[in-house]
Length: 464
Image (cartoon, rainbow, N blue to C red; front, top):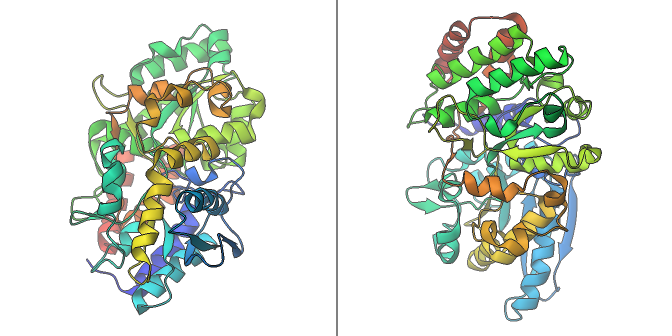
């Protein structure tokens, strides 16, 4: 159903409160970036959501002037670096771009007002994945990017293009795949005789947790479960091939994947092989400390979480392995793409074609994807990077040298198993139900999962 402008802006405010890094849906982080927003955006672990407007301009003054908005300063830094190379390579297409970094909610609200009024939109703008569906309602006010994507399309992960599409047109270009993987603390697991490579299913994972509990005397937990984030649920849905919204965007949270994941996690808590994540989820300062202290030895997270290790847990080098996630039944897909930022070109731009050319080149070309990997630590959309050993085997790369296993080995293993969950206008309300009510009631108070989901479904249907 269509929503008016007030409803959309209210949705933004809600999302800002719930989703402030690049995961799926989470409660606010404290100084670590946003959560559905761009946990990839904390890519280097030093990025944080902008708290005040910041403006920089790059490129020759006599170049074609473009304006770009974002909500992550490191994105501006990336684009500025790519702009320098663009101007070197394209003397006849010189660009001068003013980058403005706004706080998350302010930027999305400002963009929506500009779109609704028909004036004031920038040439280029980042839009967080959770907000993107709001801008696809009615007649889309962005330039289709099909023509500029086409030269790179055969090498790009298709699902990440589909996330920003409508009626056969692509309107946004992302930074990364956001493939979910399992992180394992090999030093502690080896100490207690547990081989993480033997863990293929959640039953295997549970058995390893029981072994760890017995051998470690209950001093260390296999994992932590989140009360303020839905990454575990997104993974479960992808494994089952389910989604908590229907094809027309209606809520549908009473599904087997979610019930089974929550029930399994309740069992872990009751059996003492899991703890509740301090702060609500691992992508928090409390979560980083919990990992550093060796209180948990495994958890699933998108590959952009690699930057968190380097920036918040640098002392744990040669400790953590990256592996495919366990599944409920062997043969199920072992990953899901989480988080994202789709960059768009406004129809209001007098230089929309040139802006689109620069955007596609910056984010999809080989050179751009290498910069995204090396500077931001994202798993690149362009799969040619995944098999280029000058990149994937580079011993000087800080991400490759930090982990026990090579990130690209796992990425290549699961490349055909990376599922996607639809993101629609009801998602912030779904997120609120899980992060503020369902998961807390189930994990903190031992409430019945089916009852909680049924109650929340009724409330979501009224809101929808």
